[in-house]
Every structure is written in structure tokens, then in C-alpha cells.
Image 1 (spheres, rainbow, N blue to C red):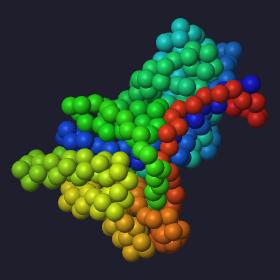
Image 2 (image 1 turned 90 degrees about the horizontal axis):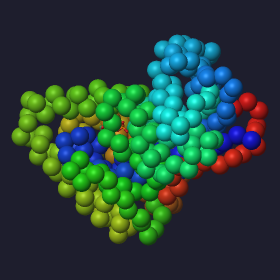
Image 3 (image 1 turned 180 degrees about the vertical axis):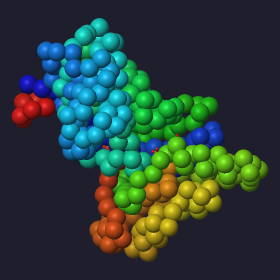
Image 4 (image 1 turned 60 degrees about the vertical axis):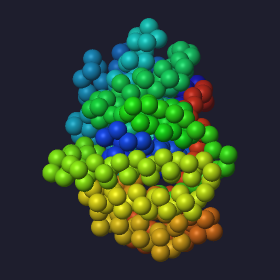
Length: 332
Ligand code: PMV
């Protein structure tokens, strides 16, 4: 038997960029998951098979040895090495590990793929040693891995991936969780363009330095949009929600984080019946999200795919991280 842990990705509904300056962000877990298998090893290597992503290798005393793919890829896997080691440290265990990583969440697209993989890794290691860690402990340990990749992340991605559902995050208030009465679904359009969150955050910081009064007002308005958007989400007022998504997109574009390709996808979605559409995450590439009545979703998806982009129909999920024992299906 081996352990299988899965954890969901996320989408930012409102508040990207403005959250950096203290405004609230509204984040939803989506039903696209990362999966990690774990098994004990007799030596002290941490072997990570990420063949789907084009690389695998092992860490021995924190040094990466590539088996497949180039050595610099090890940087991406370092997060998992750290997360799994910190988890074993917490459980007072010393062991080698085989980890196999698979993910249905596109990488570097703003959909929380790295956090989901870190969260699933911690849960897979915890279950392997029957540690029974609490969810907030899993989230914290995954954060240790996330820090390796992102420097100083807000902690939202690991949190939403651990607990699922809807959350509001604001620097001054921390995290609040919400449960909606009705299900809700979105279309995610992936532009297939990678982007760097760090670079986009820096670009906004430069714009703000030169236009402090104007940019701060934009950020303040983004905060209002986010809180009114949360209200609309709770009431399931999808027309109001869609309107606010459109307003948020206009504000994000004014900060310079939208691109021609993202605008094309947003307008394509709206033209084909979306009530609201905006970029999600850092911008500069990555994804858009669109809200539409179910009958219009297939048409919107088709139109997005015609624009050399990928489309996913996603549902809000309350299923956070989960781990269980499964039969071995070949090598983990
Ligand atoms: O694209 P993502 O998921 O990395 O989101 C970035 C969100 C920002 O507000 C732009 C940055 C941040 O740290 O909150």
C-alpha cells in the first residue's frame, strides 16, 4: 500500500495586486487537484518523480541530483524536499521517501499549483507515518515549502488548498472562511502564456511610486469591489457579481497588468454570453475567469479554445486536502 494525497487549486475572484497594499482578496478553491503518492525508502534519499512535468530526481542531504530533466529544475522540487523534511521533523521521524507528483492544475498560471502540490506532499508524508496532523498544521508546513518558491507569499494559497471553500484575506484581519448556500461555477481561460508574479508585483509598485495618489485610489476601489463582490457571492446575485468582475478588470487594466491576449479572452467570453470576466492572479499572462449561466458555458469554452487557449469548466469545491491508503499502481 502507498499513500495518496490530493489538494485543490484556487482562483482569485477579487483583490489580486490590491491585496499587496492591504485591501481584501476573495479566493475560491476549484475542483482541479494536485496528487502526491508517498512511500518509505530504506535509504535517506527524497526521491521526487514529477515525470508529467518533465523531470525527476532526488535530494540527498539537500543536494539535488537530476535523474530526468535538467538540474536547475531541482529548484522547483526544493519546495517539496523542504515540506516533506519539515513534516518528518515535526513527527520526529527520519526516513527516505519516494514521492510521485501529478497535477491537473496548470503551472505558473496563477491557479495555486505549487501550493496544492506542497499541501498534498505534507499530507502524504503525514499519513505515511500516521502523524494525524491537524489541517492548520498541514497548511503551515506547506507554507515552509511555498516560501522557497515565492519568497514571501501571503499564505492564502496554502490555506485555501488545505481547507477548500471560499476565503477572504486582508492583511489587517487575516483569513475568514465562508460557506455558500448554492454551488457556483466558472470558466477559466488559460492564455498559455507564463508570467512571473514577482515581476508583475514590481511593475505595479513602480507605477504606484510615480502616481501614488491615483494608484492608491484605484487600490481603494478594488477593495470596495472585493467586499461588495463577496456580498453578491453570498447572496448568489450572479448579475451583480459579474458586473463587479468587469469593474475589477477595468481597474486591473489601469494598473497595467492585463495583456492583449487576456483582453481578447475576456472580450471573447463576454461576447459569447459571460456576465462577467476578468484576469485572475498576477496578470501579464496566465488566466482569465468568466461567470456565465450554465447554458452559455459550452459556447464560451469553444470560443476561448478557438483563440489558441485552453478552457476549463470549474466548480467551487469545499473538499480541501485529503489523504488515504491506496493499492500500489506500479512505481510511485
Ligand atoms: O498569480 P498568483 O496566484 O501568483 O497571484 C498573485 C496575487 C498578487 O496579488 C498579484 C500577489 C500577491 O502576493 O498577493
